[in-house]
Length: 210
Image (cartoon, rainbow, N blue to C red; front, side, top):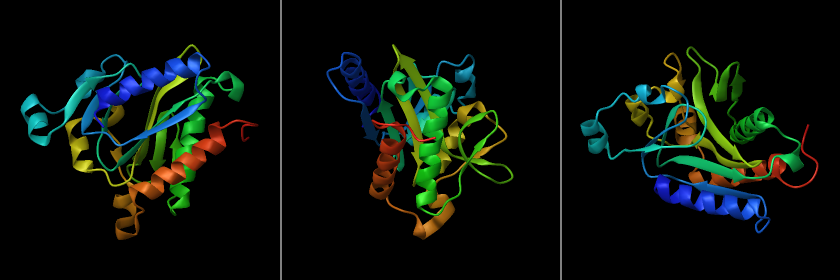
C-alpha cells in the first residue's frame, strides 16, 4: 500500500480509538517504495539521491508528522502501526519506544537472531563493526494515543538505503533477516504473525510485562 493511503487509514483509526469507538489496534502494512522524512530539523539534508535516481528506482518521497529523521519503507519490510492509549499501559513516550524495541527484539529472537538496543540510537540493532539496524522506530503521540511505529526488515532491498543517510546516522549500517540468515530466513507471513503476537503481549490489555 502507498504510504499516504496507509496514513489516511491510520488517522481514521486513531480518531476512532480516541473517541472510544474502536479498541487498541495494530495495523500491519507493506509499503510501496518510499522515503519518509520526519520532523527532526535537518532531516531532509539526509536525502542523498536526486529526483532522477529516485524516479528510476520507483521510490517516492513523503513528509511525515512522526518523530525521528529520514527512513525508507518498501516491499519485504513489515511496517507496524500500533494505535493504542498510553495511559492504561502506564507508559510515557520513552517507555513506549522501549516497548516497541522489545517487540522487535523478541520477534528477531523467535527466528534465531540476537538483536539489541544501542545506547543513544533508537531502534533495534545487530552487533558488529559497524552495528546494523534491523528495525527502525518513529512515533507520534496525539492526545495520549499513538501513531506511526516500527519498520522491521525481513527481505527488504537494502540497496535502496543508499539513497539516504538512514535515520541520519552515517557511521552505521542496515540489515534484514534475509541478509543475516540467507535461505533460512522466514517469509513475510511468519514475521507478521510473530510480530503481532509479540505486540499483543507487550501492548495488549491487562498487566504490562515488566
